[in-house]
Image 1: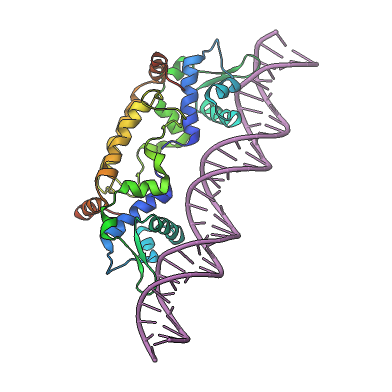
Image 2: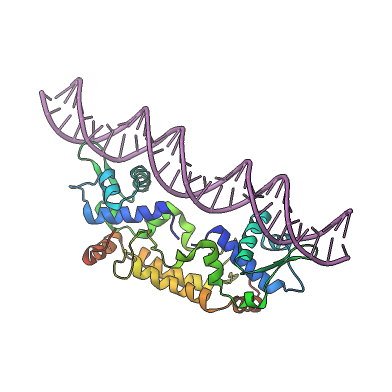
Amino acid sequence: MFSKSCKYAIRAVLYLAANASEAQKAGVKEIADALDVPKHFLAKILQDLSRHNLISSAKGPSGGFFLSEKNRRATLRSVVESIDGPDIFTSCILGLPVCSSENPCPLHSQAMKYRNGLLDLIEHQPIEEVARKVREKGLQL
Amino acid sequence: MFSKSCKYAIRAVLYLAANASEAQKAGVKEIADALDVPKHFLAKILQDLSRHNLISSAKGPSGGFFLSEKNRRATLRSVVESIDGPDIFTSCILGLPVCSSENPCPLHSQAMKYRNGLLDLIEHQPIEEVARKVREKGLQL
DNA sequence: AGAATAAAAGACAACAAAATCTTTTTTTAT
DNA sequence: ATAAAAAAAGATTTTGTTGTCTTTTATTCT
């Protein structure tokens, strides 16, 4: 479903939502250690997210990454789309170039059902909401 | 979701269900042309499927691929699993090594819901059923 | 203010995996 | 025998992942 980059991005954003703030920024090393992902790969992803204004960063001593208030209200969908591209939720599950409601592939209707639930979580709940659930339930990132 | 190999495999199997029989076998070239996929890549996939007894083949002149009665009653799930491995419907959508009902990732419950719909189509309807729908509705492979 | 330092940003190289193409071998119908 | 087709093996290309190194920027301490 998601690329590895995208999975790491989601987890990193949720980590930042839960464990960092403008006053308490998190460095690449801290995040990479916490999530157990390759540090340099993660750095690139964080830079991508930062360039897309989905997370915030500060250089220099006591610098690092964090979420601004605006970042917290963004949706996970924007994160997913900025990494995996906008078609991930709409493209045909069988990879057909022409597959739509008018001209559906054999799996189209089922596949739509499948994706709409996920889209709902990812689109209609802001990052801070998802992060709150993570905290409440003590879920592992 | 599915790898490219797997997408091609699904389409090829449905093509065979709709357009071939023991009396009227389909060659790699015919299938590749019909589905517009790379011929040699498809050949490898068909060989995989054949080795896993999900499709049948005959060498020599007027040879080719087709589905036996038994093949027709198999599920699309077995096709998917033989290409993409058994974990595709159960592994964590965020790639966490430990993610289960007891120890779910933030997207776990939503992800499960969706996948079950797809699994249902792929698991509980034999290939011939799916192929019948394809034919009835004139869907494009 | 200026030097030293810490951290992100960015360029690039190495490696791994997936997809595609080529060639050779085996089988079988004619 | 010959030709047609799958089967098999392997080479190549492409894409995705990971690692290294350099540059830039911001901070802190004198």
